[in-house]
Image (cartoon, rainbow, N blue to C red):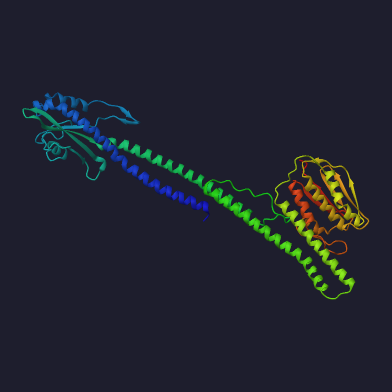
Length: 487
């Protein structure tokens, strides 16, 4: 199961359980809460009416046969017959629902607004019995057994009269109200709570989906980043990649994980780079070291003067080759640690080419090769020392391949420099690999005296300047073109 589905399922499960219990609690509390409010209001009503009935009860105007003389009884009867049409928060009320009855000190009903229980003995009813004892009396009685909606709530209040002994309870006034009269309010409240719960659940689900999508999106960014850095640290040319991969900008612990992955990537790149460097260097050093060792072992024997001189020359040549490899490795290592060139003042390509030709003129003359400079080129924000180093390495490479008596041309054109020789060129399969560390091709005559680092240095210099190096066979010869970023 995918991470997003798991997160979404877990969120819906937790949210659904929480919503179920919360809604259940709300729904279970609505009905008793409404009835509690109803009972509180009936307590106030009963006590007010008890005070109004106390004079008539003390005067005996509520007793059987005398109720018609009671002002209190007349007012209650007028209340019961009053028309009413009220809209309470959207709920219509068209009946008055209070039933009022009065009992004497023995619990006998003296007055009933509905004339149902006059003369009946209510002394055992909870509302009357507790009130006569001076306690709070109330009861809820179902008119139909087993039907909770038929419940009628009764709340009683004592009727006090003044006697020589003080205020005494002379009777009880009970207010009764069917609970079905407030059921509409309860139903409406339950509907509102239920619909609000559904809305809350929908909003929570939307938030859950959004959070899940956000989490999955960030995790996928981390996954893509991890997949992108699992390849080799080196570029196609065998040099260390200079542009670090973008670290996903994510918050919290995911951000910490991304930064930890980036630090791991840097350490792994350094290790891969060193391992590749050591393998290539070991491979290149084996040949001159083996040649020096073989010549040294032969020199330990008695040899003719000519052979001794030949082996001694071979030791010197291979030592020089080792020295060139070491020097160029140091140069390349310094370049690979840099992120960009540091040129600020305008640098003329013609001046750099002139210096490079001066550096290699002696070696070219020794091989009978002429160096020529054509064009003037342009100036740009380049690092003069690096540009000169790149051109010097190109000229050295061209001199190695150019036949004796030929000409090597340096051609300047705007922001490009081309070095053209008249040698045999290189095989077509080798053209894309020119510039890789330690990659060399056979020199004229079959020897492989190059270090394979000269063009790697050139390519690295161009990378630091934002340019590129291209090579093509010109039949005869090889033309290497350096295209600098004009800035």
